[in-house]
Length: 274
Length: 274
Image (cartoon, rainbow over all chains, first blue to last red; front, top):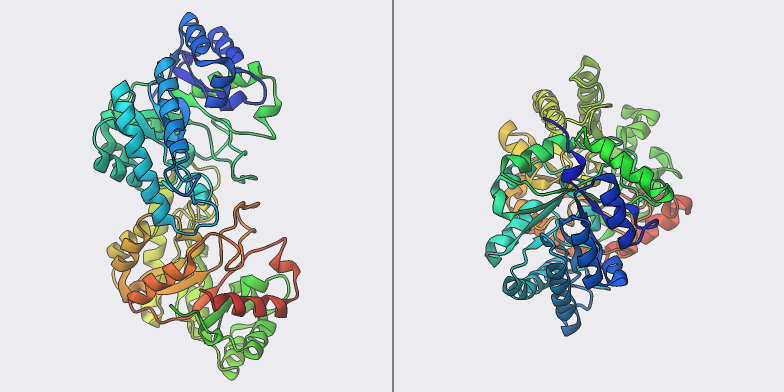
């Protein structure tokens, strides 16, 4: 299996979050020959979606996703605020031509220990956003997060669980798979086959470091950890996935402290072996 | 649902690992009215299994398990050393009258990224130990570990995965469920029902802290985190589980720094609400 060429990579802005604005990310991708970008909403709003859409188009970049919608459990019920914010996220994703809106669904509401209730609330929220997203023709991508985030970030933690939700909600919704979140899952091959091409909406890479020093901000560069990234890429591509391979690395003590051009050059070099 | 009385609790020696020897744990359980103990092998070997068995019997304590067998992936293949060490663990568990031998199966071999190969090796090892354990009449308990340990400690990470292995290996093997490892799993209720009374061999409690500062050594005391412990206890007891409720807390910066009698008193008080 050959590696991933730069033109098939997408830069998730989180990878150089501390160094670059979205405008700088767009410029950086163009200079390095990276084919697409995937903005986080804070950076998109800072630049403005209209200006961002134009700059992305002018640079000839794809947009593999917008991070992130979701966070349905924030208020403990599906408030107007949460619903409206997700609808705005759909609008923003559509405006920049994103392939999907990536959903980090939210963990336990503050003070709650009721995980099934949180999961029910998430599904109610996803259904609401999906109704709206269908009118915009924008795919909604549930990102199952690693189980270590069940308490505070996302109570959808396996691909099976995400696909069960997709089965219930119908068309227009699928999954965004990040190897960091799913690599440990003994049934990931089965679930990727179950997802099929239509529901594989995004594929994110980075690496799992051993040891990992921080639950959130110690992701590794591809090749520095223990994930067999090529194996997972082969699984999604066997289903026909031909989207961008998105690089999303949260790394407070390492990659966020380096020159962003060095980070991009390293990403490109390492992706050749993925 | 009423809480857990001290007489139904078991003290896993890891909870006061830095403060007490096994002899002190046995004495402490007796003084506090805790019904059972669950030693780690290093502490058991330090005291000597024969002396420990006598002291436990004299104190009138149960033994909810021996921690731990497993670690099958350590040498990259199922070496004589690994097989023999697991057989010794069976002997030790039988000698102290443990309800089961708890298996932490091992993660990726050093330098490997091949998780399916590691999982196959684990199953080969479990089959070997199980053959021997059956002759001793000692139940083998697979402990699915939280997915954040897949790389370096255990590549069996869900109850479904553990039960699939049990299905293939037959009688004499079941699961040890620790709420810390399984609380996030959306299908835990289904899998506990699938396990049934015969395969629910141990039940461990502690709590998941938000935030968690360390992947290994920052477990919480019951009540200090987000796990609905009573809900999981209800699930195992609905299947007929009537074994001890074992308390296992790794806590480098908090509970390991306190007076051990204070830790036990706190365990007893908090368990009343579990």
